[in-house]
Image (cartoon, rainbow, N blue to C red):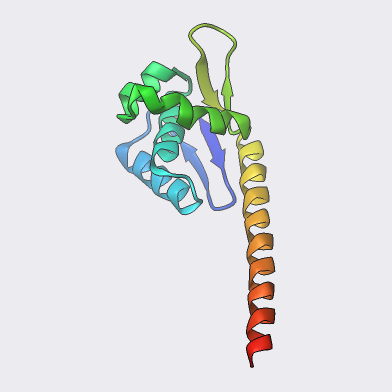
Length: 128
């Protein structure tokens, strides 16, 4: 069993994930701010545990020429781990680390939004 945590849900998935689970996971990831390709990669890795870039490309219908541009930011953020082997193999990072990264990212976005709202209100107050 694989337990996947985010700040939104806890799901215990069976070894073979259903299409419904993958669709639901992709939707939740989109709601968290992942783009379509990132959501597909994440869902693919949740379903397959480990895969090469070529495997991911084939299973997600993401063009192979774009797959590294999608995966590498996820690796940089610490949400996906890559091997040092050739070809590189990718798998999901620790779910708690993923959750913490997502929470931190959303907190930063909220901080920026508050700053923009404060400046906007101050500018509007000057015009009254």
